[in-house]
Image (tube, rainbow, N blue to C red; front, side):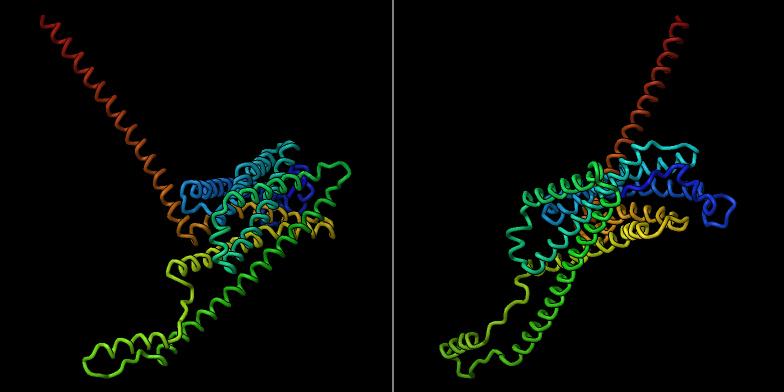
Length: 388
């Protein structure tokens, strides 16, 4: 989302409302300083969380399947934001606070990374929505032909990133105005959002059907177990009469299909449904945190910029950046495999850090002991020489 440079000159237009000595909530300089501090926090938390997400998938083979590859691609987009875009914006804000101006190249690079992030993120979210829809609609086909087809998934992800790179480079084409590009950008984001929403309507419909189907099957099992009890003929102790009757009873009793196959199948379907809910929450967070910025772009097409809209744009951009922090937290809260792998990685890092501290401490103690021994030896030799 390339915006104009946030320099002191640009903000000076709003000094009448946002500057010192006014009734605004934040003075201009205070507001920029607070934003810079928030951006540093976003940078640290987002970088750690998204690097953890990528490392967890690459480290644990149980996490290496199609859905999580799209999650890794989403995390890479967030890493770009947290390591390049957000630090550049924080540098802009600190430069403004110090009374300096930031270079135009920094502003253009930041805007370029922001556009790539949104295009790549929304493409990956659409792919995740379709992936979950197929997994719930055609569970057997998904497990045997899509779930572990990681090479094809990697090609799809590569195509997303090439498309994002080419699409966000369009403003550099001579003759293409920024307004035309922004209109195309917004139309693209809205169309992909419609695809995501339709996919999740389908997912909810499938989930409701599965829930009703499960209730019907449970009712059939209870009903048939009452209507068709295992009948055996009361006879004498002749087993030759009893055994055929038992087999006949089993033969006459209608088959009761298992609702979701064996236990592993039910477990996988439950996991697929839970993953679909988690991805739905991730998509909801994306819409809540990113769409205020999209709405403000649309607003600025029809209305001139005002101090209020500039302030709203300022904080809408902070919301957009914070979306990069939310996803790893959702994975840790909602997905047990990710949570366990995050814990293992962090524990290993802390253990290595503790071991390094112990080694440094032992080396320091060893050096101190050797220095003490050497000084004692020197004193002993001095006493011996004096006695001679």
